[in-house]
Amino acid sequence: MFTSEDLQQIQQHGLTCEAVEKQLENFRNGFPYLKIIRSARVSDGIFAIDGNDAGALRAEYREAQKSLKIEKFVPASGAATRMFKDLFSFVESGEMNPVVEKLSANIEKFAFAEALGEKVALDAPLKDVVKTIVGEGLEYGSKPKGLLLFHKYPTGARTPFEEHLAEGAMYAASNGEVNIHFTVSPEHVEGFSSLFESVKEHYERRYDVKYNISMSVQKGSTDTIAVNEDCTPFREGDGKLLFRPAGHGALIENLNDIDADVIFIKTIDNVAPDHLKADTIKYKEVLAGLLVTTQKEVFRYAEMLENGTADVAEVAEWVESRLCVKLPEAVKADREALLKVLDRPLRVCGMVRNEGEPGGGPFWAEGADGTVALQIAESSQIAPEQKALMAEATHFNPVDLVCATRNRKGEKYDFRNYIDPATGFISSKSKSGRTLLAQELPGLWNGAMSNWNTLFVEVPISTFSPVKVVTDLLRPEHQ
Image (cartoon, rainbow, N blue to C red; front, side, top):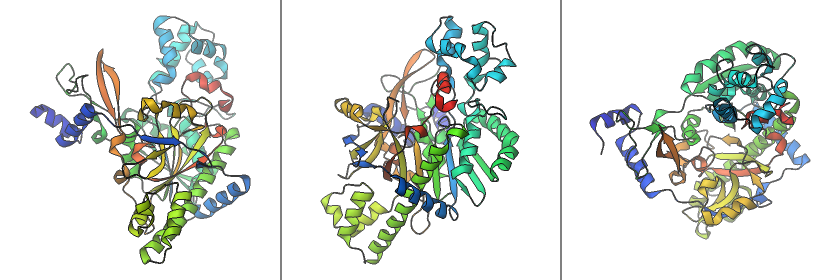
């Protein structure tokens, strides 16, 4: 099937022929749906933390913070193209649409208005203004979200990149240092680096911290081959195979390279200005507090199981009630099997009340071994006959995670060992006017973390302020 030129191209991507053959097999066979049992709810898989407990958990985290190596991990490689889709449409067709209409009526409220005014008069013909936003001028249509001006401040407008610097200083500092890792596209590394160098001194002085900023790009070895509708390899006009980035699930490799005890994960566009950050900071510390207290208990029970002093029934009950892992009967009395359940990476995930926002949700799902545990599932992972469960879900996933990365001996887990490879999915795309099928790896917070121990915690909607469309920046949470 593959020519010598194909094999060379595969090798250049850091892939093996066997890996590509497996990808082709996935196209032919498809991926199974998750076996969903029910949606998770408060008191049934989602913890609701009251005021007193929240205060205690924040205190636990702040005490632990002094001796932990903490990293903030921000997926930031996404381009803002979709954010400006309606603006591009207006430029191409000249037809007004609701997004452009709203933008036009509120142009001076945007944080980028001043920068825009330096390129074109704000009262110039609307098409010229919109062209300057997405094209020559601000070039926002080709920049990543992290480099766009989101919020106004008396001292000047801020980008999401800068908001993450501020956030990091507020909850992820340890001994005066803030470690933040951004995953970026290769073509934008220089832009992020230049921005950091220009603002570093300002934020370090403002928050009295030292920033250690690192960046990585999605690895070529995580790309997947594209195929035609008959599942044969898709070839471009020059005969070469087409490989595509395999979605955010590929970033488990980047996450795995981080050397830290605790890792906070949050997407680049989910940021609020300083005067609205209080709830974000509070609940980040609550999630982290639950993480470190739960990890202590995991380590205590693991040690007792290892040295033979544990009450196995007590451990099994704790695993079911605290770690939300419903065990098969055979496992409940098996010391080694219980130890294996405890000996996994741990994550605590914030979940917000469903108010109509799109996104995956928290569910109870049954694994191949009969264990029922918590999973974050996307709609593509749920069988058509179970779609009603999606509509019944009371909460959804805002991508608000805190992760513990080491076992009780201080050894870092290899996250690649905890992926469920059966949770990838296939989507229809196009290239040069031709339809193709694309394969995405198990999502970073979905199947890539399928075999982690998982806790869900209810967090307020005020901690969730994503920007999917440019006019989202007019929402109260961004003004």
